Image 1 (tube, rainbow, N blue to C red):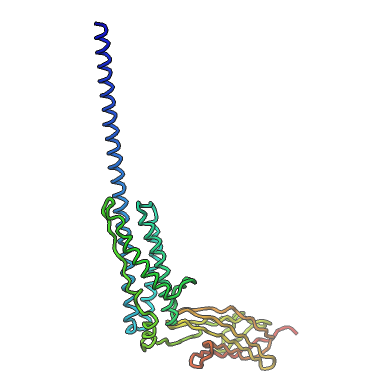
Image 2 (image 1 turned 120 degrees about the horizontal axis):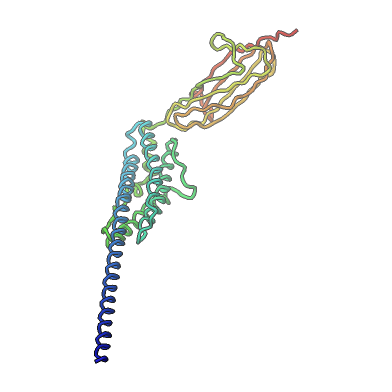
Length: 330
């Protein structure tokens, strides 16, 4: 009888242990299932967020490619200012890509397609910079500084290569949570004969650069007394500082030379020549130059600006009659 009771206790204990183990297995399985579901949900959220960000960047890249291709193919019908505005707009778009694509570097997806897109986009920014720099330099417009290691041909080949590799990589998340397939990249500008297009642009009368350099302001120290136009009347002094500001009124890079000549009625001529390259529609103030004068002196001050090398059609000058008041001493 005692043996039967012990057997029953052992049997009951085994049943309890079995039930506990069953419960633990079920609970563990439920946790594993819930964790897997949570992981899948997290990956789904990450993939869909990446898809939204990536689509924005990729659509912008394709729109940029189409605009650049159109500008090079049909830009000969634009005026020079309109062409410069469109070129500048493209440059600004490239700088925005660098900021936008940086948002996608983290968190790293599995597979790390976001890292691939960041790397490819940064490469393509340099490639497009090279193309824009080539066009801007050929047309004598301001533009981005191209990477030192890239030629135009290398940049276009790189644009084609990154578009081709992305064409394969964009499917890497197709079987992941969210079933994401991303937008392909266009290669219209990579296929252009850019040197030929630039030659067509250069032949367009509407894009032919015109030049206009003017003297914007002249400042003399010490400040002259009130006097008739083109006359300078100074208080007694032994030095006179002259500073000249010039303006480039056209959409073209323009080398400029500034010449200042002080010719006394009696005495040695003093002359200085300064040079600077002005960006389109930009102004520049040359460093002030100090001339030696004497109280009671009379002289002629000539200020002129010209292109480098000199072109008479660009000359712009002013000539002043200078009088330095005599010293009251002695």
